Length: 412
Length: 115
Image (cartoon, rainbow over all chains, first blue to last red; front, side, top):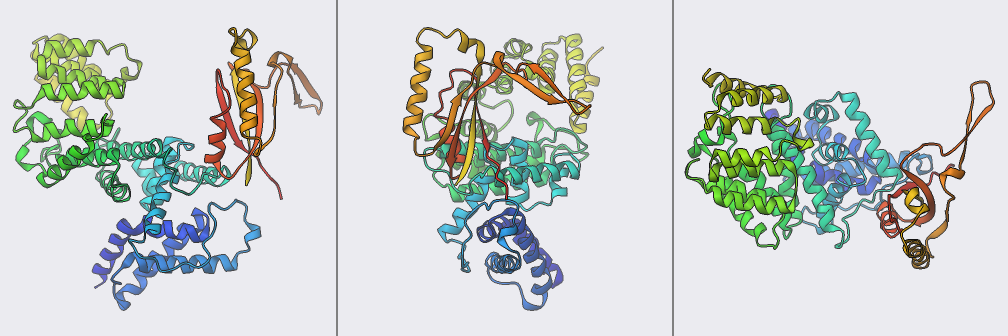
């Protein structure tokens, strides 16, 4: 009984937190009090569900409890004493709120757009999204980004203060601003995903929890903005890349390259869903950057083997992506695809054009990609130097082990 | 409603020796900005160049140090401001985007109220 209640509360935390918080912020007018009330509501659930039973709609139960807490707190506290201006006009009488009530759905969307407002620095946007939309504790958010809890607490407090003082509105932006604002939200989700997919430093290759949060959020966004091609593109990208998670590491925790992965163990349900979403995302002309990245992932996922991959198609998609998003990192990936489509000499030539890019100067993948092509061209001395350079730049233990192994395999 | 100060930063050298027609275009831009947003404008001025600025700082002995020049030397100097009324930051940013900014850009700061 207790175990099932704990599981139900954990599940409600993951699924309903944003929904409950967003509905409560409308009562309190500020995030801090709303967070406190929502935390109380979850604590109440843990205490009362074992005897009272798990409610049929846990989200509605939690919302009602949190909102009542908020009303009680507001009665006790005099509004005039408040130091910070209110975020939103308070809603006088909160109703129980149906889950599919359009206003409630809007509330969650409001929360996401406020957390990902471009007037906040990107790190703060990510931190607030994890804290307020996903309900992670400050300690958990700090761990995810490898900073101290004090630093993260200060970052979150500063961001909340700016929201209140500069009056960053708690609302869904008007239609003419929507594309730019949705893009800001997607940038946050994509950063969450890539941070989870390959942690910049540390003993593990990825952080599963961050990947799952980004996938959950992309699904929520998809429900909220079903007609947005970029949202479909990002969800597709996450599904199509994450479909390979089971094969990225060997049993002893070593990195396995795409070329060597057991494709039969990929998550074919996720690939199927991702491919449908990519088709939808590509229907918009011109396609967005997430749609193009997802399309590239889809070509990989659809190939029966590494050798049978349609590299020309991949180069074509990268050409479109570079045009849309002239980032040196994208150009680097394109150069690698060129090498696969047209041979290591062509790939090396494309990579060598990028060696003066300042952004790539500390990027281990440029050196490791050059090393791969040099190795395949039997230029072992140069390959050795490039692997060594790459090792100097990588701080991820799993990646470093892989590079050291490759270095060891080179003939002297 | 809240008030925001829109601080206009720009390259003074360019302002000093404007391209032909650029000064007139900028002045026309400000005039149009003022007419379009008259209802929410609470004030605004252009400033003389930083070469005319004088900075005053307290010194440890209780007196003052008076120096020639702006408080902080940057490539883009404060050249003017508008005080506007807006419901929230998005509204203030929408106003800010209409301010002529031939070089540099603008900074939007909420006005602090006490009491």
